[in-house]
Each structure stands twice: as C-alpha cells, then as structure tokens.
Length: 85
Image 1 (cartoon, rainbow, N blue to C red):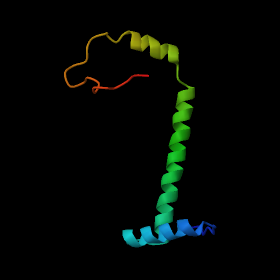
Image 2: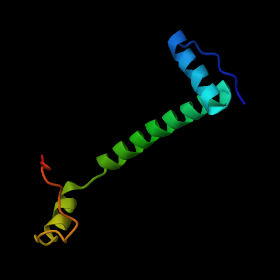
Image 3: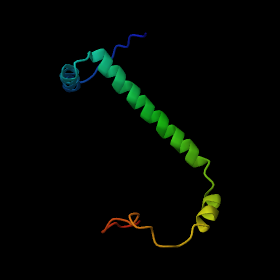
C-alpha cells in the first residue's frame, strides 16, 4: 500500500466524512473506491476513443446498406415524440 497526502477543499472533506459515516465505512475506503471508479472511467474513455480512431466508416456503411428498409417489429418502434438528429 502507498500513502498519499492530498489537500482537498473543506467542503468536499465534509461531504466525504458525512458519506463515510452514512455508508459505515472509513474515509480511506471511500476515497479508494471513488478514485478507482474515476480511474476506470478515464481508462474506458481512452479505450473507446482508441477504438473509434480505428473505425472504418466505409465498411460500416457497406454493412448498413444490407439492412432491409422495413418497419420495425411491434414493440421496437421509437417512442412518440422521439426526434432523430
């Protein structure tokens, strides 16, 4: 384990203390969970961006051109008032 000393605003620390008490956990555990979740979100964003850069839009268009232009099956309709971009 590594110890990390950080400075955070007092208002955020109050929220952390309140949440730790509410969740019956330690501040250390709460901060570790929150940090892990944020790191995971950043990594996912990087992964998605990397995959998007490799996308072949021409190949996508070729595949989509094979999809028949038929009405949706019952239950698969767009909700009333839905607007496409």
